[in-house]
Length: 604
Image (cartoon, rainbow, N blue to C red; front, side, top):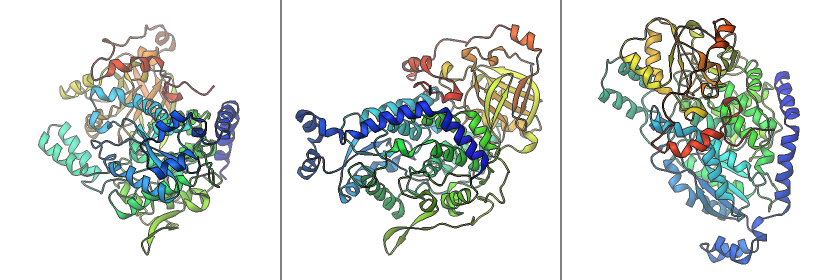
């Protein structure tokens, strides 16, 4: 095992001893009572299975058949979630085949960040994660279930489902993906057209044609953003079937994997011989494996929030310092857009998760002794699914990459360290994704241009008043201020300015999309401006130094002068419209970015 990996894991275990111990005590107490429906009153139980078939009722009333909850984030506006429409019936049949009963326990909301980019609805996006967690808990709260199937793909949905599931950590859980859409217009070409549109060189029709050719069918968007990072992490952390993450929807293999998920969870309940509760499975080692996978693949920066929040739900105290320590020893092994020109289908064809996980295991960069839904991690997750005479089987995946422009091994990485880095300095703590930023753009010393609204920045760009080297400081975009929206809409304009030869960067307490790339962006800056953080005292013309190589974000102003400044306050009124007023209690309760930006508090 890599020494740093072991040291970081040991540090997390020691730090989390009390909170993890308390969590496991609650989990095991819940498990000790057996199927909770056994203690339901007759009227309660009759309500619970009233709509079941006579055979299902017989199995449930005698508590001899496991009852599996299906919790789905289906809607047919999200291309990634549209395939879930048919899943409940498929899963019910598979669970019945395995000797259980499945009930559709509840639906959770699922919003699309691609639709809400730059819109008011984006201010609800991060909070939807915690709302999904609560919705999952409501679905599971009826004391009827022995296990769960969680149907989700996109950005906040998967983390929310997992956080909710961990509140019922005595039950087994299997995450069920839908897979990416087939490759369409290459992501790099789509980005090029976006930038041309930002420059006024192509019109809306040309832009819409390019976007529609890229996002063109059911399935996940093919770039390596938060949705596909979710899939990667769920598999590496042992919550997906091996090789299930990136199989396209509507294919025979996808349908077979969906059915197998139903059979699999039925065999993991306390009524069988392979009891695998999700709260035991997701331990400190599994969380560290998730961080390693995120770093090795240059995954979405959003997971510096989500993994912290998921860990906290299991009583585990994960911190940004752990990401930083691991980033120094985990090499960058993939080039998937925005970190390269390939998409996730190309990654899958190059060997995909089986090759990646196998190489990381062989290099001592993953814990091999973790629990998974599919048995031995060291064996099962080196494999990929296939058909053998019509039957679903698993076979050994490629030991080496089949396309080294997309996927490489630890002995020949694209970069010796991970794709994400932590920044510290006089402006606070922040995250930067360097895997898509060329080395010559990773250090920017330039005066600040301060904005408190992304639309003001875009207006200045369109007016031609942004020129020369500068650092765009976008404040009051943190979770307390307005829900921490993604600011991906700024990417084309910043890209234009960088391509003109200007040294530009972004510093913000907001977020960027997992698809954001080539412009250096110090994001998730904490403490945020709305909490009185240093960002609230930055003025136009202040010299800012963003140094991704040294891991710092500094303001070059006399410390006494800077400390004496009166912090600016959030302009305007509280966010109203598009439902934002309903989320005021969450903005008041949310924690800081480095603790997961969660409304559920932090690990004690």
